[in-house]
Image (cartoon, rainbow, N blue to C red; front, side, top):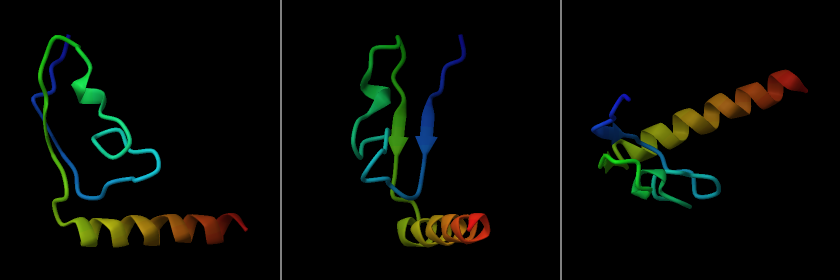
Length: 61
C-alpha cells in the first residue's frame, strides 16, 4: 500500500472540499497520518481555478 505523507494545496473548495473545507478524508483511519498544508498562494490558485472553469463553461455553451 502506498502512503501519502504530505498533501499541499492552494485553494479550498467550500462546497465539496475534502481536505478540511467540508470534510477531511485524511482524518479517517487508514493506518497512516497525512500532513495537510493548505492555502498556499490561495488567492492566485482561486483565480486560476475560477478562470479555468469559466473557460470550460463558455466552451460548452
